[in-house]
Image 1 (cartoon, rainbow, N blue to C red):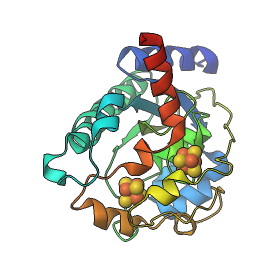
Image 2 (tube, rainbow, N blue to C red):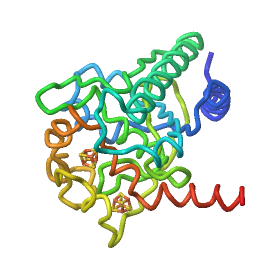
Image 3 (spheres, rainbow, N blue to C red):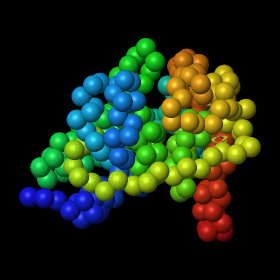
Length: 240
Ligand code: SF4
Ligand code: SF4
């Protein structure tokens, strides 16, 4: 049976939101297929679309964590990786199962697991998928900045061949801001704006960050960004 892309996408969005998604979008992977295939496995080409799902971080945990505390005691680390990332993995599994039941192929990409351990990249960049799905733009911190939550959100992707309606990309920039670049304790960012064809190394030294985070939970690039603080301030005004 032929599926109507708008109806199918609407139903999947409703299901995802009911299961806990804060953000939902669909990316068209065709224009970036050669780029993603040379960074991930070749079978990625079987999937012309990807669903991007975002879950926001808890503002109080982001604002109260101390970047220098030991990683093993960090509530921030526990929240980001043990709570939100796991919740996203379960949600991606449910979305993939929904798509399978509707008769389509679907592959839930793990939320945080390197596929290529030489350069610490995953099967596909969740941030790139979220950007292509119109959920935000990639800032100088190499994080996806969303209208609603700034960088205080994590993403997961589900690759699929379902004829979903793709969203258009949101192209905004950080402008003169360099707060995250200056806040990073190991100077992992170069301060270069994101361009889709540039290699990650032009903007970010993933090894410097990963080495530092072996001991310390950090997250200063998330907590210092004014785009995430704006929502926090709005919530406080609402409560006041
Ligand atoms: S987590 Fe910390 S060390 Fe890593 S890039 Fe962000 S600010 Fe730098
Ligand atoms: S802190 Fe400033 S430069 Fe860094 S990502 Fe946020 S808006 Fe962009």
